[in-house]
Image (cartoon, rainbow, N blue to C red; front, side):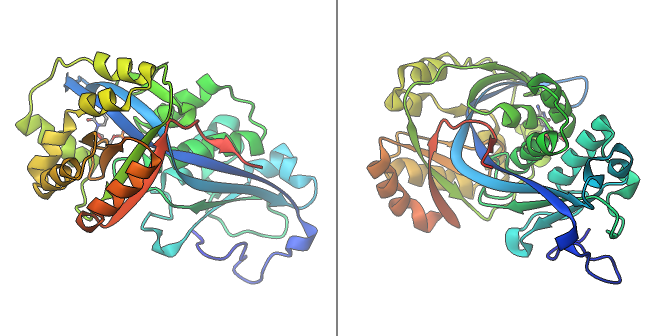
Length: 338
Ligand code: C5P
């Protein structure tokens, strides 16, 4: 995978002046779980969930451009030989090759549309080849339990469906999204949703008002799979229902939401990283209306009363975390900027 500079052919730079170019830029939000109950293990090895998910103002940005000799980037035969490149800042801490969910999303969509033959995606770019260049700007904590990789994959589906003139509707995109990961279908839709099954069956949820969050990222790495394995060892299926969270969202009541935040993966993550429990206590001691692990962690959320309270809370807990962000929710799904 070519990282950092575009369009090398191996022998010379492709002359961009003689190639047409179209570009789409998508802003794509981080997800938080306001409620996450694990009902048990499933026959397919995943866990059966009931979860309330919400998009936040914290976002990544994905730029996607197709370029090629004029006319050829739209020609079906040329498209089957489309090259694909992904650029991510080297210090972003995410994989740049086929392991990146953005690349996987592009390959899944490309195969579905017949746009991209996966045997060509990493071949050198020549003067007569069409190429899709994706460039990812990361702001969402990496591997933090905020669906950063999943939301980037959702952005790739939305951007490339437009750029490659795929015309897949939202339901078709959600079906492809479920192949990429349990959180990706929600990330395609955004907003506020109740998720069941693996987390991929979604219904919209009413949310009034704006909520203010302090998001504390810590260095304690935690893989989602490891947290679910820990849940298998230390937890039992729960019967807790999301009613209190849904009522608080519909009333726009931050205080009630703070008291109702709940995540069954929290005990499993704290068993692996006891320091996270102390960070959550610090968030509550500093006056958060509620505090909960975000997804499978290790990021912790603190709910504030309003914008000023969020700034105060962020300053009070900053020393506990590697990074602290202030964000609002809800937000929409991936948004095409231009
Ligand atoms: O679906 P995704 O690839 O994001 O899931 C990552 C890992 O999290 C899975 O391999 C699985 O171990 C765990 N997981 C689970 N049950 C879910 C979602 C994820 O066990 N509903």
